[in-house]
Length: 293
Length: 133
Image 1 (spheres, each protein chain N blue to C red):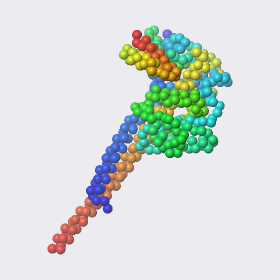
Image 2: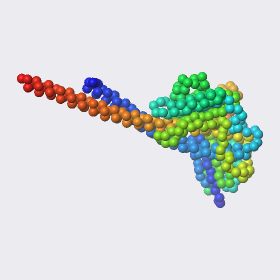
Image 3: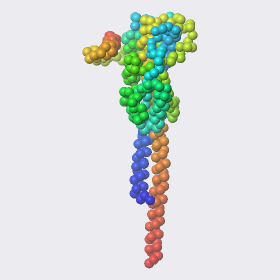
């Protein structure tokens, strides 16, 4: 039976925890709003980029000389997995769900006899995957986008991937990230970046591509457009991931705040009961003492 | 003016301009071109420079872009810019600071790749500087 003082102290400590979690929830909520609008603002660019790439790829279709980044190396021996997680924890299952998926994906690929390299973007993912696939880890990035990710930062990641690809360090590149659905739902998404799967090129029929003129020419535009597109895709996935992170943190902190509230209620009842019991006990002692006289 | 052309300028961070205008002059890598309604479809790369938006017989808006891509067809012009700043917001200090940085980057560059990046930065900074005049 804890003493009254112990209970009082517990209540105070849980109350201050609740204060912290509810403050974190507020912070996450306001950051979420910003991250969400950033993710939405980036969408038009990615869409138009895809449309342009579709047109280009359509007009190049059937010709040799498409860049390897678009068409692939023709092999799939070495896989690069770009794992986008957060730098910080306390956001529920956000990081672990990514790590779980990467772990499953890696195991699958290794079983098929492929070599896997994992590039972690975000500190938490690196820490969690180190135990199982430490030898597959390559150098990654940390501390991106403290104040919301910017395009140059995403470009840095993309140019590293590009240079690795050009050095023949991998054949297929997949990014795993949390796609933002709503504040309470994040979807773990695997997206293949290299070779890039162009879907928009199919439905644009012949009349469009036949009339397009290209300056300087298709190959040259494509050669600059494809790495750009990679950067955009990375940018988009990190933005989505950041919005998801804040959403996940908000939900986790909301739950924590609620749990703390429940705990305070329970403890308060316990505290009042034992206080009452003590008073009753003292009264009985006084009364029976008086009666004895 | 008869028909207008829909002009869209997007940077990775956001949609900057989306408007129907008379004509846009885009600094293409093979020379500036003006795009009006019914322009022949084309796709081109864009060099660092200033996009002039002509509307109602005068230049309505001038925006500096640091390179990118442009897609033109009969009814719209889409410019995908890596970086875009309205010319009105550029100050001479900003331009010269960037020019200075770019020159230092060239001096520091060791590998060919670094040199290429630095040269590109210098190109952008020079165009930015020119845009202030």
